[in-house]
Amino acid sequence: MANKDAALKALIEPVVTAMGFELWGVDYLSQGKHSRLVIYIESADGVTVDDCAAVSRQVSGVLDVEDPISGEYRLEVSSPGMDRPLFTLEQFASFKGSHVKVKLSTPFEGRRKFQGQLAGVEGDEILLHLDGQEYCFPIESIEQARVVPQFDN
Image (cartoon, rainbow, N blue to C red; front, side, top):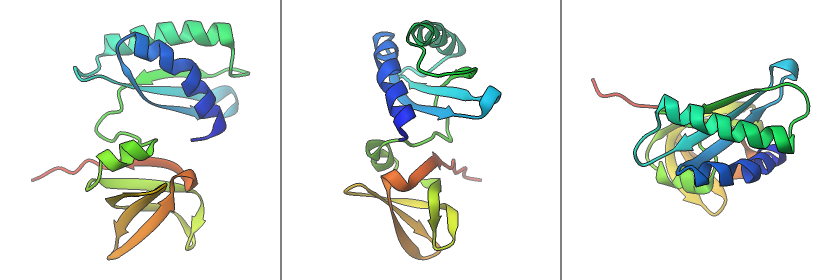
């Protein structure tokens, strides 16, 4: 998790938790005037559009007061969904056996994107089975990771 994301998570998490939700993750995408702050919330009862709107209003108030992001940005609040992003070692461990897409911050063996079966977590590394091989990626080298939903015919 980037430093900016970690700082935003520390600011946002108490608000989300106080509203009865779990903060699944925070993703800040800096793109000039088109920057986005995406907040993923989770609940055992599921997440509705109204839940997202309520969290958005509360978090927006905190962000307006604290002003942690310079410039314009769009705030989005969402459930993680079926193709949920993975941010922490615990999240990776809980999705062991699932298919995932991983994008690395720097190339490994000439590529940055990998897709395969999540074999687990060892220490601070993610284990990924792909094309008959097992790859180990330190979590700090992962720029982005998502579960790839699998559907039976």
